[in-house]
Image (cartoon, rainbow, N blue to C red):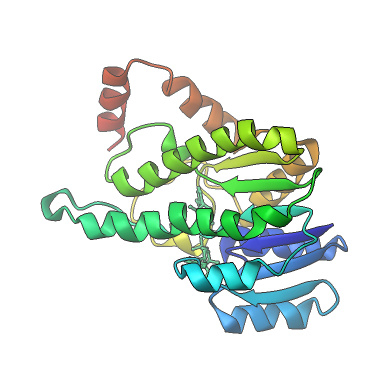
Length: 238
Ligand SMILES: NC(=O)c1ccc[n+]([C@@H]2O[C@H](COP(=O)([O-])OP(=O)(O)OC[C@H]3O[C@@H](n4cnc5c(N)ncnc54)[C@H](OP(=O)(O)O)[C@@H]3O)[C@@H](O)[C@H]2O)c1
């Protein structure tokens, strides 16, 4: 397969890129960090081609990605996380988070979609954070709820073209993103585990690849409770 992965310079995207490369697939690894991109190309000279990409730059994203006309699988993993300080509420922080997590992903779709063929897969890395109103997660959880809705609508509109749209909803994964967190992260899994579950889910065509399983089930069940119960539950977890 020809696989294009954003966010391939760190964490989940990097592990998935290396694992697909090890399996013999051709990977276009995208990200801003040119040192890591060079390291990936050096480590997998026959399987990884690096593509410098800043998804917050619309023109650069279009120019960089529109040239890929033979991609079987797209994994949009580039993302950022910031938490709200309720005493210093900052709209600009929402802009920063949505810029990458939502608009950045849409810029990638705009550039790649015209060349995606029937049988290809488009995968959005979301988060289980979308499922409950977690404390301080207004921007991050909001961006992931938005991407989940967009992906679900795309599932409807791209099905007639034979393009399968999948979402990934991870719980906590050990990456530089969560290393920055100062709170307890239940059931945090390794990046190798995450990559394994993502690749298996993509192979099976699982619509929403959620892991770890028990954590995901618990949050999905909670998300069906009345809103007042969800808020009460999140207050207890805060
Ligand atoms: N870790 C978790 O527990 C967890 C849980 C649920 C969901 N997720 C989601 O999983 C995805 C990957 O997260 P991670 O934990 O692997 O994070 P990470 O280690 O911090 O990696 C984030 C990646 O996003 C890229 N990125 C950020 N801003 C970018 C930009 N403007 N343009 C292009 N690339 C950009 C970074 O690359 P450069 O710096 O090279 O640009 C990096 O490769 C994210 O969408 C995140 O929301 C993570």
